Image (cartoon, rainbow, N blue to C red; front, side):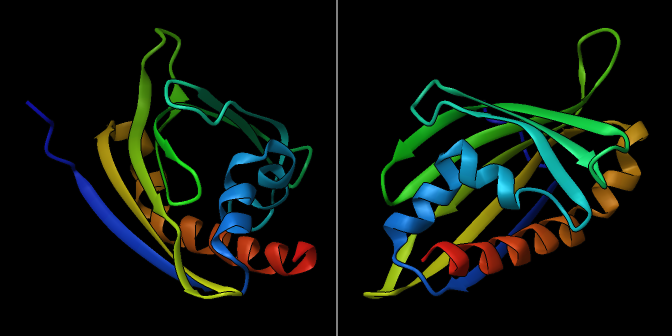
Length: 157
């Protein structure tokens, strides 16, 4: 039986790039490291094995040398260039459990030859009390990250 999400949010961006490029900036670790995370975060570690069953590991650093927030997950569906489904686990405790777990679905939809719609659905599967602040800021964080993506993709397109 599938667990009922605690919170669900959907974001949509119109990106001035073909969906093949959109897919690439989500699955190429060099590109992903350039835009992932809210404003003020860098990604000194970004490892992506974009295949079904493959993993994702990103260490987000606040202003480059501040606190580091590791996130890891697994790709459940990789359908190039149409769709990615992956988990994101963060705030790992000393006992190995995670404070938050999300299931992310990214869909790449052609609007025109050089434009795409990018709906992202985030379902929070598990969240502990210790991460209430992060959960409260999730929408702002995703929006800032997607703003960075929109700017980044224009620099490589």
